[in-house]
Image (tube, rainbow, N blue to C red; front, side, top):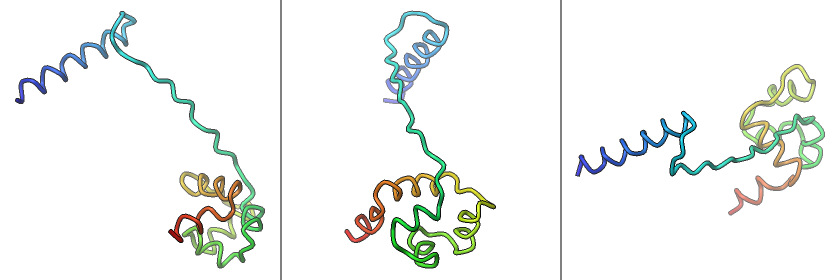
Length: 101
């Protein structure tokens, strides 16, 4: 059993090396275009939800201080927070819809 798995891995690695060297292979390349995550004004996104700073911070799982820093522009959201703000900008009730089940 282990030798079959090893052989499949070896063949896959051989294909990967050949592909990297520009040789014809059975490798299928999938080019996935990553979405553009826009930098947004956190205050305008929050206003779309109709929530206060305290309620919005709780809603998205950050401290009020973090939200205030984003809104003042002294800090910028990154990673998952930036993605969440983009979702909320397009669908202000998305978190409520999903968590309400």
